[in-house]
Figure 1 (cartoon, rainbow over the protein chains, first blue to last red):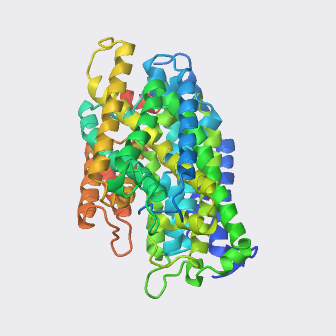
Figure 2: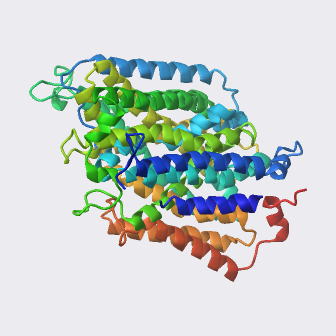
Length: 67
Length: 518
């Protein structure tokens, strides 16, 4: 699953590269696209935390037998 | 970038509003300092006890400088709608990735081995005490311009609201005749530095986290307030965008090249946000987290917070193209738009407070991190454990924080007339160029001490070469390519090639940083 998340992140970096049209009558489409991109970043971050959280590393760090 | 006048007539109301804001900030931060536990661990990393919301606010507030409010509006006024994709949405992806891939892992290693600074981690990882003496001056040199931007930016903001307007004198012609009645830079510098120093001195990292939380909420809400009031004055969102310049609504480079963003610049600008991976003040904030779970909100909400701040500012910058002359100084766009359209001195005071909040939420963390680095990476380095008591360590750290604040204040006066704002992008480029070092240290077992030296030296030489070619701080690209992309590539190549050519580190040592899990 971590590889899938990484692949999505790479695809998003490409999509980031992305007309005078306005969306909703006030937002240039070039801005609207990147607003959607920002929301997708938050969704990707949520997926990463749900499916790629480094549980074992964190447990190792939080182990009371600290060095 | 400059911060010129935003009032039609000199009224003391905005200054009163700003003063009230500074008093509330100081009161809140000093109240939080009462929670200080009196240990060096609490002073440097808040005893690793900061929860999710405060971690988000302090990390976001530290990352966003005055550029988030003032610069974003000015940049959109200058080059158009491409500003958001160029600087904001790319940061949403890359900042969140850095927090997830670098922040959580560094927090884990910091928690396990008790690191307080970046250099402690790198010295341990690459088994080289001298490596710290190479990296330390580089990090300090890159942070100093960042500090100066804050202090000088605050001074110019206050000169803007208190200075003369046309034939009318400034706010205090009897007290400050030499500056035409404006509050002079030396006084603003003292007030800003003193306010930040008070709570950093008293409460360290915990006070900074509380202050940053308040400041971040202030600058986010003031940006939205300015956006709402300006849009109302222009007759609503649709009416506002209709009077914007058509060339600013697309990213295509205009015929004269004044607006738009070249495709190659847009692509290579994506390296700039990587700087968060190596900001020493951000590293310190990461270490304050109570648990790794505290990172979850920061990773998810950071792109949304960027959007909340940047979208209104970019739109205001686009609207301003229909209202302000094309030669308006970019740093003045937000202030002039508020001054011309809203006029209310209370609102002007609130927006000014928002700008100061964005500045100071970065300043405090940077002052503290430099004091922490001097104490831990220079003074305590090589000393046996127990050589200094905890109280002595805190005293040393406070002494260094005072010294850094005084040095910054003096430099801000000396360099006040210089355009240090262009240095911001060079500062970010320098930190981004060092990111291969932290990635290799965390994710590549084969990375060696020699590779680390080569990576840092390669990044430093390449960065300085381009910096000199730019005339020491001007805007500069190589055929449209941002210098940071080349610096990053050189740093990464040096790390890989030299590491592969040298003996790998001992497996037992590597295992400390790559534990066998599960």
